[in-house]
Every structure is written in structure tokens, then in C-alpha cells.
Length: 230
Ligand code: C5P
Image 1 (cartoon, rainbow, N blue to C red):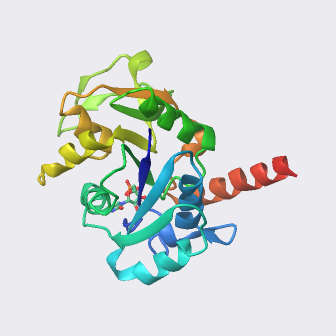
Image 2 (cartoon, protein in one colour; image 1 turned 90 degrees about the vertical axis):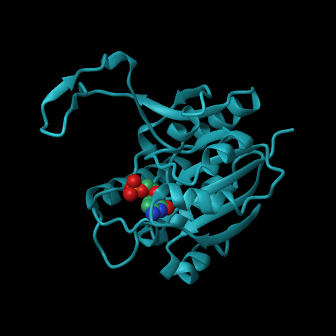
């Protein structure tokens, strides 16, 4: 049986977004990014527990943001100085018995539910890990410290990955047990163990809210969905 624990990373300051509040506590259509993201993940199939890593100095506001979400129990804990530290802290608060773990950025509040379901389905089918990804449209260059191009990876083989990223729980726990391990996404930590992480189709709506313009786009995504539901 698949039982999924979900971690929501919400402890970043979001400096590129600006504003007085941490990014996850900024609002779209009157609700925080954290509220939208947590509601999405709490309603996903087989999710039995959700742990939010929130800024240590905004725990009360983060708890208020998720207080009305129904379904699995939602716990809010203090995140860390880096994204990986936040994930490590939150994973430590998930029930020991979950078979799979999803890690999702609060900064990606409008990932379509079908993307979340595809990640969970890949885990249920036995994948070590599954991450949503999109083909890249730009040619990507690898540069050295002086900004000189050292490689041009073949574009057709590149994917821009999003969250939620899903893993068999023992693998992610093992990857995080190395307390020095740091990465910009969780897949990289699990890949280092030699595990096979599959890419499932992502969606443009899974974009990460990073700049003020992204907040406008997030608002448009939500309005379009609500109009479509009417
Ligand atoms: O900074 P960036 O946009 O890459 O952050 C991605 C996600 O990781 C965001 O949801 C952010 O709140 C979270 N994060 C975190 N703890 C940190 C830094 C970022 O939970 N120390």
C-alpha cells in the first residue's frame, strides 16, 4: 500500500520577490501561496500527512495560513538556513511509516493536480523517484567562473524540473542523513545515491513564483481556472 507524506518548503525569504513578508506568506486572490500549495497537496491521493517548513520568525502566521485545510494532518515546523536544511527538518517530522515522500515548493502553488497524481503514480509503480519536467526552449550553456562557455549540452536531452518531487521514503531519508549534503533540488541528493529518478510531464502552471511579475501570472492562472470551473 502506498502512503505518502508531503513536505512543503516555505522557509525562504523570497528576496527577488520583494515585499515585507516571506514569499510563501504573500497572497494571490486573497490567500497565501502557502495556503494554495498546502490545499493542493493535502487533497492529493494517498497523502496522509503534510509537514510545512516555515520561516522560524513567522511560525504563527504560517499556522494560521494552513489552519482551515481539511484532510490529512498539517504540521508546521521551523525551516532552516538553506532549502535542503528545511527539507531535512520537515522530513524528520513525517510519520515513520510513510512509503513515499513528496517535496513541494510553496512557491509553486498552482501545479495542476494531474501532475501531482503522475508523480505519486510513478512511485506506486516502483520508481525510486519521480520529478515533473518540461523540455527547455533555450539552448543551455555551461560556463566557468569567468563566464566562458565550457559545454553546450544537447538541448533535446534537457528538462527543466519542477516540484512536487517524489521519492521512495527510505531513499530520501538516506540521502538527507548526510548532514553535509546540499542541493538546489531533492532529486540531486537521491541521484547521488545511484537511484533512478524518472521525469514525468510537468506543466507551465507549475512555474515557481520568483519575481513580482510571477505573482501577476499566478493570479491569471487562478482566474482562468475559476472561469473554466463556472
Ligand atoms: O529560493 P527558492 O525560490 O529557490 O526557494 C524554493 C522553495 O524553497 C521556496 O518555496 C522557499 O520557501 C523554500 N526554501 C526553504 N528554506 C530555505 C530557502 C528556501 O524552505 N532556507
